[in-house]
Amino acid sequence: MRKLSGLGGRLYRGETSIDFVGKRKIWYSFSALLILASAFTLFAQGLHLGIEFKGGSSFTVTTPSASIDIAKQSLTDAQITTQNIIQKVGSDKVRIQTDALTSLEQSTLEATLAKNFNVSVESIDSQIIGPSWGEEITRKALYGLFGFLLVVMLYLAMTFEAKMAISAIIAVIHDVVITVGIYALVGFEVTPATIIGFLTILGYSLYDTVVVFDKVRENTKGIAASGKTTYSKAANLAVNQTIVRSFNTSLVALLPVGSILFVGAGLLGAGTLKDLSLALFIGLITGTYSSICIATPILAGLREKEPAMQALAKRVGTRGDKVSTNTPTVVESKSDRGPRNQPKRDRRR
Image 1: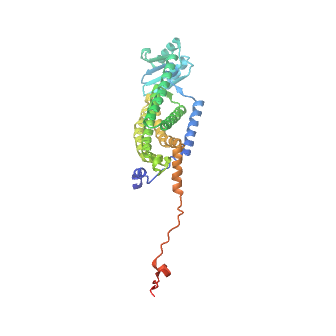
Image 2: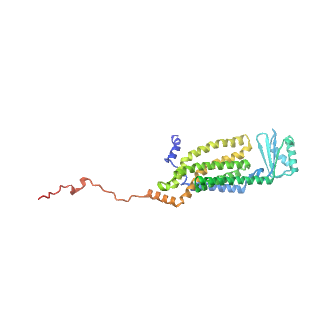
């Protein structure tokens, strides 16, 4: 227990070190597998877009006898054969989402739902979204995503350096691709709340990366002139010095998000929360991982290609491997001098 309690201090002082940068090929391989799996899932299953993006009709029935089976039977009775999604929201609501319906189909379905659930037609909350509105929402979501990435890249380039900005953006794209792939695998519906969750995890991932990069900049300031260590080793020390902080911050953030996802959406049935909470939960984990195992190794790899850093690595390596070839000086003791210790001849005649 004492070893664990002092681990953070030993990592910060460099007494104990985990070689994150040196093992970059392992992290790259693992991330490549996750990205390939995400791409395959997206290609095979695709995302389940909500009606806000693709357009369609939504009907919410509030009744103590809310049941998914009754909702399915109502669709069959109304002869609605379009693609549909039925969700139970809480304990007294059922939401039915379908593709775009005609006015006659909408009226027929509302009457059937009212009859089967024993409620009035006026109590059914209906929402109709046309395809043009869905396209507009999709376009605005993409504009917001790309605008966010552009602003962040400019900020990082001005605050740190261009290669740090490139590394951070690669890590952010890595997080988004994996999160979207898991979303497609689980089959959760993509709603505007999901987009908000994506933007939130982008901000968190960048926050964690900026913390690490700030320490990297501190450790590598004037490193070429000092010649004491390589850029990769200094960057790896920065990761070790900030890993405890990153882990604690992520854990504290995951606790409330996990409560929303597993307790709120899972146990209490608050279906409107699961879209946001799943994106946040996955994004927090991938963001912490990418800031440590992806962003910093990429930065170190880009900087090590610079001529100055290559010359520094060569000097550090030469100094470490250098063997002294100077001939040792032999100091003779008085007892080893032999004839020199003999008394001088008396030159006087």
